[in-house]
Length: 260
Ligand code: G3P
Ligand code: CA
Image (cartoon, rainbow, N blue to C red; front, side, top):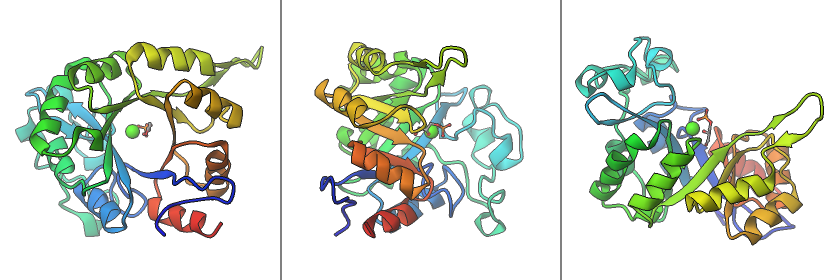
């Protein structure tokens, strides 16, 4: 079976390929997305920024320097100045010429029954273009999940297209004096409810144990975690009951978990 299961929890966990199958192909490119789908991964994650002329461009950074060698601020650039950049060569010369994709191109690759987590790296100004891209794609809105650290972006996405899934992204910090970790699970739950989100997508380094997961689930919310490349940590989180795990090594991690 392709389902990733453990002895303690037979429910399949959704494995999400972070920036595509990004250990083996350049992150956030069509090569990384197609590799993930060819390896039968059930979901991918990608990041988007809005260009000056309103195109949603798939890139983690707001600047193209790291992945293309050419420094351009996406929000200050026209798409015509970005589309020729090479986002593959930095990873390996065999990927030379891999372009920066648009969200439209990425969405077109989603197979039936699979999902795409779209991380919106900006405020809600990107949401109308995102909703249009999802509509244009012909995919079911429920095949796309909007994720964002920007609370107002999550709320706007659910408002404009309620059939989309939306998960609020958060990480944790620990006060070095008091050792108190924030935000608390209750704060995260109220925030998600306020935004009308379907769930939370959290940094795995947070205090996520079975009690934490039970609390989130009793509130009717889904719980995803990022970014886990270590099978021992993945097993612990699956046993705690998370719905899904985002990883840079999707196929490899699934193989490790299947051995359990
Ligand atoms: O899936 C969420 C995760 O991708 C957030 O961190 O920096 O990789 O976008 P980052
Ligand atoms: Ca991301």
